[in-house]
Image 1: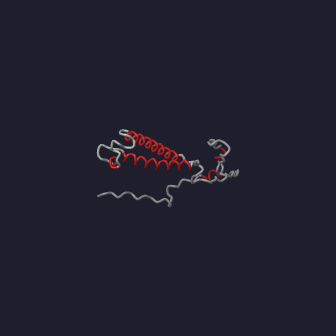
Image 2 (image 1 turned 120 degrees about the vertical axis):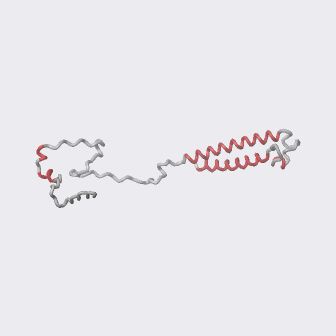
Image 3 (image 1 turned 90 degrees about the vertical axis):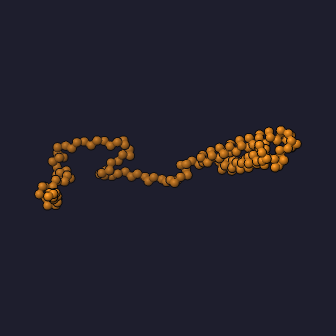
Length: 158
């Protein structure tokens, strides 16, 4: 696709210069650039009315080529030859392999099963009376505990 961009850019420059020259050579209502080169006279190279028709047709086709190459260059610019995935910031990145969690781990392994974890079962009566489960829940502070500061009463306004 690089060669297509070079060809389109070359055609773009040539057609733009051709449009500029052809527009300047055409005879306007006054004494324009076309009259300075002698194309305003009746005895021109293309005949009495031939120059106006030839220059306007040539300008039309040069403008068509100019707009076609503009569209082609825009298309080439927005559709690069390589895939956007192949040429990005993450090119060559490989994700680290996942390691299986040990059997006693607190993190569940969801790599092989459903993405939604199962609902845990309600604790049984025997689990509630066991000492390790009771030790996991902190005790509420007592009312007279010195570690908890008391809030002073708001001062009354006189």
